[in-house]
Image (tube, rainbow, N blue to C red; front, top):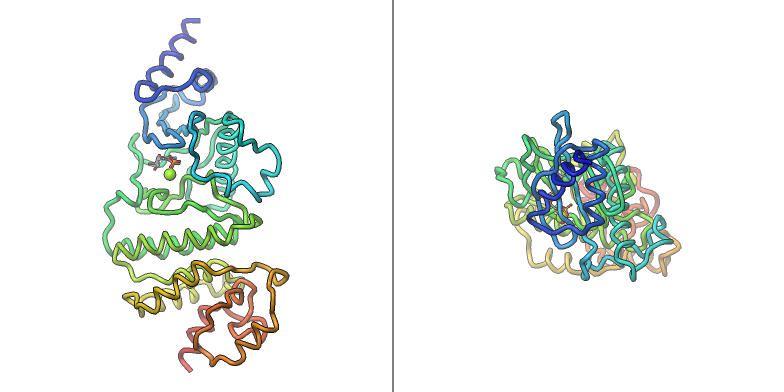
Length: 345
Ligand code: ADP
Ligand code: MG
């Protein structure tokens, strides 16, 4: 009993910064008793929706314990992420906050598992109990890695981080079938000069009806961060299309990335015209399957009457459908490379 009391003491000590409810404390005490970790340290972060603590195991490893808050009343419009995700068709109850946070923790655990299995740098999920998620600690000697927003990054490194992220976004989409949906400099950690993806409770499967909207938002956030950091970036549309292009394969991805970065470098500062095109793309409806296209023949006709290389605003599904920009057939190479060639001729 005194052992139990001592363990409870340890759990209590960690609560000095924020008050945990008895249920959560019981979960933590059980985890301590199970030997999942032997000590729970202070808070790494107190957010609106979750607190993250650092814990250490008996053999000296660090873990991160993310505790989703049951008390919050204002979730970041969470409904939009859950509705339409086939993995959460049942059991989502808006009226029961305890069930709701359990679901978010579960979602994060599953999404981290998917990413980790695909070799994407993210915390490895370790254990889940209701709304308490235990995962790998990203950091060194008990100090959490800084967020990209706070990290000291040289200009040269920013450039390489941008390329890294463009590839990461594509891998998440193509290999994990996930869109992060809250990707920004706040949810990326810089650890040992590499980028680590965190905070994936709201990430959605590609089957989610709004997956492409979220991808477009992620792409816009990433571009805007790096643009502010002085990196020559792509347009949101270029980044988006690179992520979804089915014609980029293991054999040509290096060339595609090179072509992409050349496009970015040749356009160092955004023009007014670019900005308008960005805005239009931001609001455009992008069908994912040809059944969702209203007027394929009409689109084909209107493209037939625009000159090669000129504006194709209003028609956005060629790349995701794997077609040539002029829709005269299936593309045989990445859109970014077809484009580079058509500009050259
Ligand atoms: P939220 O933004 O919903 O509060 P996050 O998952 O983004 O939750 O975590 C909040 C903060 O906690 C992060 O910005 C990061 O600083 C820290 N953090 C989260 N997970 C880890 C981890 N596995 N290792 C180290 N620090 C972490
Ligand atoms: Mg976060």
